[in-house]
Image 1 (cartoon, rainbow, N blue to C red):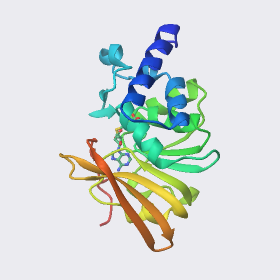
Image 2: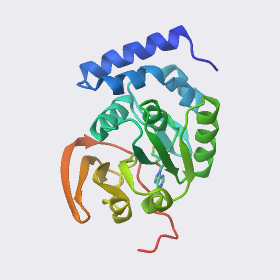
Image 3: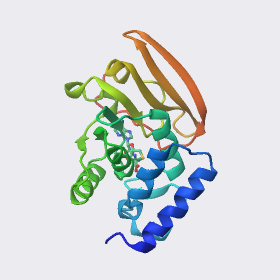
Image 4: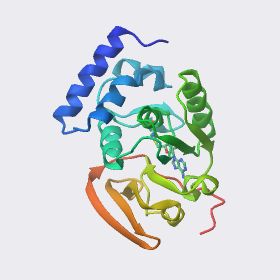
Length: 218
Ligand code: SAH
């Protein structure tokens, strides 16, 4: 399936809707207008809704995030060109693609093998550069740390220590924190020094849960 003028028109409408909802970061809006979200719908039953501002199932019990949520989280992250960004929860790869369009170096982890394979294949096909890993997001990616930014796209029960440790001093984490079946608070965690963090809240959101892997020792 290809991109078309119709899809581009639908994306333009989506961007207008996001502006009305308060998104004003032009770079983020440009990235959203460039990424063909309809190609990230692994469950084609929902294809007609690809440019509705909603989350939809992508298989393996997971969802592609709502465009507003992607735009909001990306705006909070304030990514700058060439920064190293760690994403937890590749899912469809849509958020990964939006980050890549912003010119950052993306490292993304997914714990569902099937989704990891599908997202990696799709990003390759679209020639979108990102390094995707199959693994447990709670552990981060120490081999590539430290990261300028860390973005969590699933609802975390707490702020994982390993991810705080892998953040650069001066860096920022964006993470929805709350109970797995309920509502999460969007939080920014700014690393002020090796052991000082400033946490701020940015409203309520709903994500699929960040699941702990069974071999996790804690
Ligand atoms: N960024 C994605 C959102 C997918 S939903 C998109 O734009 O489509 C969140 C994803 O987080 C799911 O695919 C889920 O499998 C994954 N996830 C949940 N717990 C995780 C963990 N501990 N480590 C890595 N990925 C995790």
